[in-house]
Image (tube, rainbow, N blue to C red):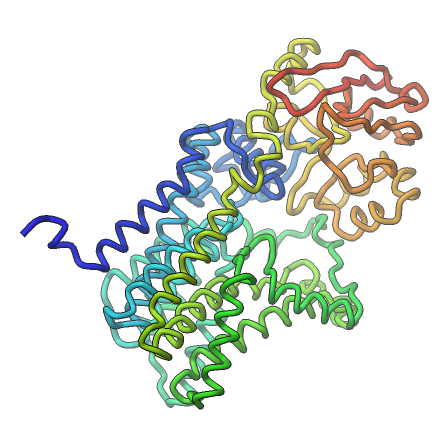
Length: 559
């Protein structure tokens, strides 16, 4: 008997799925810095943070240590725990190799986790193999937020382990999963909300089945403790730090009831940028048709889990939208932690819920008629094609490549022109993200970080207060959040990327350069020309451009 004959149908499907994942990831490994990847909350922040942390020598810096390259000393805790797997990838490998490896790790374990979950607990028979493998592959190809790692895509694997323990299976494999997952995920970007959900499941068992299930409860506590130990910097900053930070002025409760209702349905159909599920075109119709079949055939009892998950799916979108309802204001004013911690992120559970629902919906279709298997296969392939179309290299091919974005050769020319040690002066940027300068080793007075000292936010605000007064949008953006501590201008608005091909220019800029100079500022990197530079005490030193750079930099010196 030949090798091909010995392989089962399911094994062939698994092999095919792994091949698709390899092909999907190949542009990152083949193109390297010439690859096109997400800018928002990626190139503009996290990838630069890892490099800054790597070069700072503060990987294991103390609780109160700072990193001087950013805003004259951003708290080390801002860059998160040193026990995160993605941090270590960036410590060991160059940026794009670390990025590609992280993508591979996340997608492979996302596939493995969903496959084990469906096969063990939801679709146990071999007749469902096309659904279990197909759904798992689709889940693994979702365009997740890169630095989130397994924060959402690792939930199926964690749920598999918890459900095993809940049913009395005490295998070491379950506890290995619960031990290792926290090292490659984030508690605030997914697992805080997941663990609460698992806790609710334990409570439901207690109330409905009168079953205390000590081992299940202890497993939840075990994973929680590991997270708290790994995220000790976050725990300290949240519970014990007395210094006010920019997060203290994050105000989320602003939407009217009508806007909340619209946001509910928008999130339900389209999802969210940090947990993109790309489910609106194929998966949502499958779920709705599944409801139709249940109603038509009166399968309420047989398919109640499917209905529960669909209701939970909509409830999570509703909760997400209502978290921004202005009716919360009295509570947020009384309980400050409701502003500083984003409880809307319960919707991060939706990828898990949506794709398990997709598998159950396909099962309902497959059971509905004998000849429905081609339709189920078609739907799975269609969803895979939709997801492939969301590959970074396709979605972001008109955006700058990593090499063009960070423009290292261009900024080397600027370093050589200035001719001083980088630590001896400070810079700020206009029309491009500060992460570009930070990635290239410059000491910046502007930044994008989750939190930083509130005193610095006020100090920096003096630089741009006249510009903020001219534009309500950027004023609210800075004052009511401020994570982007940028030199905002009324003319450019809330835009951060002006390429070398831009026709934009600043004609009526009004910034206060004295506070910049007091903070050590010497230069401004502007992506657009400043026509009234003299009125702002700025002198154009030189213009820099490079064929492999996205930017044309106008180097202004503070005078």
